[in-house]
Image (cartoon, rainbow, N blue to C red; front, side):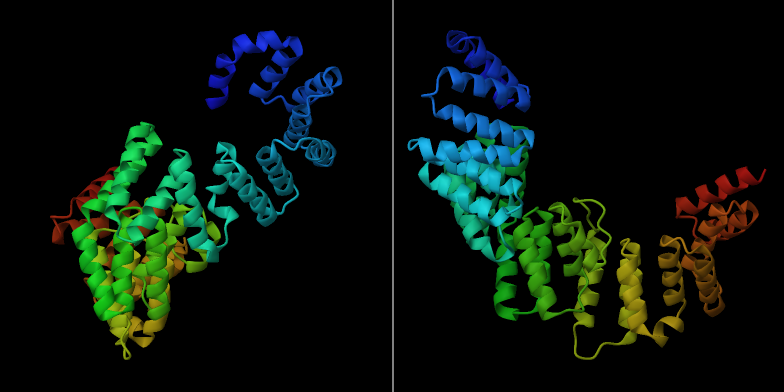
Length: 422
């Protein structure tokens, strides 16, 4: 959109430059870089004293994908033009990036920005992928600087999150006002998220006290979950990682960390945590969170009752975290094999993995221990429905709907199966 605004503003001046200049601007506006390069070279042939055209040719060739040819023009520009140092460094960064060296490219962009703030360079610097994991403090310093120069939502969000870390709420409010004043949808959405965080200040203060007084993994996990709920992804990641460092057996911070990775598009890290996080806005219910919180606390003790793992596995399975649930069932050992809850949970997890025969066996083992175990009956009902065994589905859901009439899902499933049976 910015390019087209420029296009219309310069229209009268472009006519004064002549047809070639106008055609060049038109080619750039249309991202027709081969044509733009050829036109810029023709212009340079007519006006050899215009060294800025060397940069235009280099840029066009680079955008065209002709990296080596671009370098020849870039080097001529660097040798000829002493004025446009910031622009030359910026283009050198783009060329270096095209050669695959992100770290060196960022170095050129930083030098360019030191010479003169250029918005296109700022848009490169706000991307976290160009910064190392151990450079967070430096990244935040630069984002505060960029946010002071340009209204870039990503930079302002990082600067605001850094201000939250310092509990500098006046600075957070100033940045929220900047975002709201911008009026863009993305800016106003970011402002709304920060406003939700500001409303949690009192709760955050209590979490801060718990972290300071208890100094435990559980305290960090709880604060990390709060940060995640208000989309302060970096702060949530930091607290969740610290919670896992202190208490590796905890599951809630692992889920929190995975959701943060998902929001950043870091799918490999999500897979490494063995957490199911299909959506960046994935959440668990407050009831599930409280249960996991209590069971995480129990699992972090020096001596852990095996039944704790079974109970947590059931909650994890209900949250859709079947990989984590299977880990807990394995940790429970004989306690899982000797309980209907353990076998039914195993069945749920296996069914998620589409291991239907194994899931059916697990549910049947649960019923062998407790003949009227509701989750096992429900699991066998789901399997019967999937297999189009409607007589079996009628039997299972009919039994469930009679004993649990308050659960409308059982009644609806019974009616659907009975209709199919006809």
